[in-house]
Length: 150
Image (cartoon, rainbow, N blue to C red; front, side, top):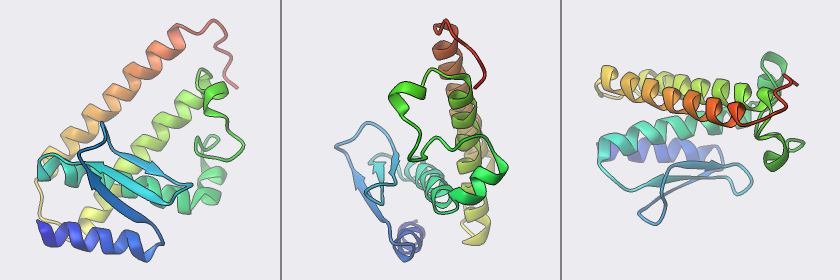
C-alpha cells in the first residue's frame, strides 16, 4: 500500500501541490490557497480513501472554470464568502455536489492508477460521507429563516 501512497503523492506534487499526513488534525482537508492536502493519520485504508477524495477536490479546483460552466457556483471560488454564504441554499447544494464529484474523481483515480482496493468499501465510505453532508445541510437550512434558493 505504501507504493500506492507514494504514487498518489507524486501525482499531487506533479500538479504543484503537497500532501501532509499528520495526527495533528481532526479530519482531511484540501487547502487551495496553500496548495496542500492534509490527511489525518489513521488506518491505511481510511487514509487512502480520503486521500483519493481530497485529490478529487484538488482536481476540481484545478478545473474550476469548467466546474463553473457546468455546475452551481463553486464553493471554493474567490468571490464566495463562506461565513456569509454558508447558510444559503445554493451553497449547501453546491457543496453537496462538489463533495460527490470529489468522491467520483477519487474512484476514477482508483481505475487510472489501477489501485487494488475493495471498491464496495470505497463506495460505502463515499455513501456514508454524502449522507453526513446531506444531514449537515438539512440542519443548516432548517435553522435558517431565509431559505431563498440563490
